[in-house]
Length: 467
Length: 88
Ligand code: FES
Ligand SMILES: [Fe+2]
Image (cartoon, rainbow over all chains, first blue to last red; front, side):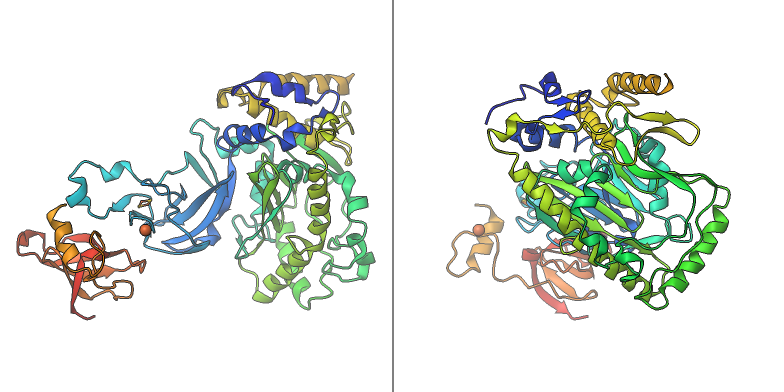
């Protein structure tokens, strides 16, 4: 394998990502050196989605999650504090937790028996007095804990980087979107729980294929999802043309690709032309009683938000998680050409069981490894990856030209956002730009609050839109 | 070889060097409240059992060498639990 990267901070990556012309070398999706550098430069720095507090309601509850390639444990300790630890013993590295989830008093390593309390302290070492003879201070050998953890309205996020900005600052204009994604359907904060277990499966493609295109590739839907768009997997069955999306009442809005180029987040987001929330329209024709529940919660939400303009209901939060109402999509890097996909589904914690079941059935039909929509997507990501590794194939860059140079800003309707036509590749370019910044950065000082490069570009775009 | 290990080997059949003697009690399913004897002679009561087969949380009930420790909380490793003296 050709070594492309000479050292961290090497600027040669820039020659592979030409965002002004919309040309991106396939190398960054297939090259092993670049992949390894991503694990260091992106995944030990960025805030990553870990899970939800509903997965660990009681002291001792734990669930295993991932940060990059590595397993971490989200655990509630005896005093009810949440922690995120690397799942590795400090003695010789064995996984201290080999279950996906459960409840425990301690994590006892199956190798030599070191035992860690749920707050991460090393509390048990076999033969401690007889064999170590006081040479080892147990307090220095606890489980490695993340540098920062945030419980954001019930959702748990973490970073290995002490100098990363606060999670809310990291989200920037998308903070509100993430907050709302964890509200119940009546608009109450921290109102959901996740279905257990989380769906997990591996697909043969680079993590950036799904990670950078979700909520940034509307152009694929007409072709890729042509069949599922009429296959009646939606809650309304074959009413409404068999659409996969629920029926919604009309509400005046315009749809855009929106992104925060200096932070890397973005979504397909609406700007509403009037304040408030659309009235409810029945859609659960295949599941009796469910509409009654959602109609009633919608009325409460409408009352609560009658004066608010809502911007941004979905978002790809840099680098690898897509947050939507009822769906959280995660793409963990596993190898240059292998991605571990996770799907977590939030549902109103207070909903009656039959509503939760109905929502779960809909999500199972829709997403995940056997859901029909994402089966369509996986075909494309997987075969595009396979057709991009060849020596000749790599001579041909990917084309990210769609909408380049046609973005604008709207400080009144969508402060902090860059907008483009609803079918564009603005969000993908935005993620690639942020990717480049992370890959080149020596520390968070170089990439927050904004990288001078992206600031200059954003200013140029703005100037163009005002001209 | 330390004294402790020498003692263990006497109890092990067909395995000359090991720190996992066969005279230890299986602790995995011992309920809280059970009193057990440790290899050092102490009697302790199980206060919590993670049921991982490795460790139990205990409270010291008898310590002939240092009676001041009675009531102290500690952890005991599986190979050091050699007898059940009182069932819960
Ligand atoms: S590797 Fe965990 S106790 Fe040795
Ligand atoms: Fe062995």
